[in-house]
Length: 461
Image 1 (cartoon, helix red, strand yellow):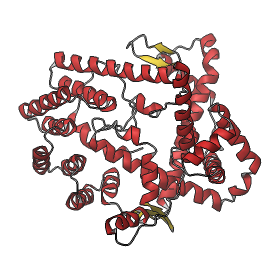
Image 2 (tube, helix red, strand yellow; image 1 turned 45 degrees about the vertical axis):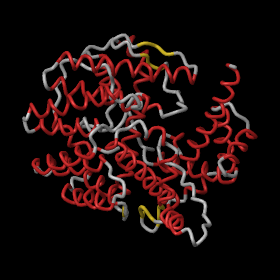
Image 3 (cartoon, one colour; image 1 turned 90 degrees about the vertical axis):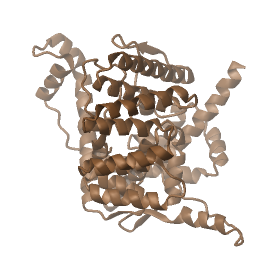
Image 4 (cartoon, helix red, strand yellow; image 1 turned 120 degrees about the vertical axis):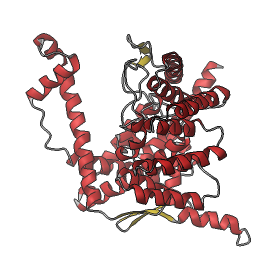
């Protein structure tokens, strides 16, 4: 029985591996292979289905002359639907926005790489080597891969085309940081920061020097890549046709009035109401200084979404910002009640909810409640990592300070969600820096600033 489960698990890993390889996730760039949606033939009498097919092929964004269709975008979302379900409504919108930006950035890098003539550098031998590396990493044969591709309606030719694009993007990105230099003083300064000391133990320094240099080099590479991509964006015409996603982009760029107009348009056009849209709209008005209008929006939303903990916490944070503490406590307590009563809340949301309640109760000075929620968050965090360890059969070490199990290394491939989601490296409405990692080992003296709630969209990854 156990062996059969292991075999089934391997098939799941293979499918995920194929999806990741097609997406470009293997290379750390995070943009997905743009699998073209299959053309659908629908009888004319089925007008509703015909409309859905047309929507599938309508443009959602445009990069210069290159169109990104809603079908391509939906394929991107579908490949990470498990992660999406772990997020509250407002963060699902951030996730969807980042999915589109991944596609946009991939188009930018591919266009630039082709203009530089880098296509000639990608040989069939290089694609073969990349393919063999993937097969070795996932302990599978080429025949197994072909079978899985056929299950997904793909051919080996299409798969290799995706690998070629991956290599082309990698080559383009690598050209952005060819001239990186790491000085000896930079390495020593990194040592001082890591080991919290002015004095350098030369023996210890020599033992960790290469590791520190590698870490600095990787950090600089990411910085150079980000700067390069941002420079490409500045000289490229990028149009987003989806009003919600354009609203998030406007929030990111500080155009709050335009963002509010985008979110209001989305709410007017929505056939199914979305509490996340109300949160985004309220935050736009909050950033404009119109807190009265923000409160009105939250009150309207709460009448419709009575059991939305994300909505309640965000409203509580607004009341904290304007020093209406009693009303803040009311919303925070309501969020806690919703979470306690919801037996079906996904672990990702549950972790995030308890963490945010910890922050809120800490700000309100209610230390007993705060400790209760951070303890629950730590427990969920442990369960998530333990489940990952069971799936991958990778031994976990335990952090001495927090008691939270941590992986031995960074080479963990999660079947159900990406490693950063298990560690809750998600873009949270509660924090000023969206790309900061949410950890359960929180300093009990850490102060919570509710104004951080409204700045989240300015630092999208």
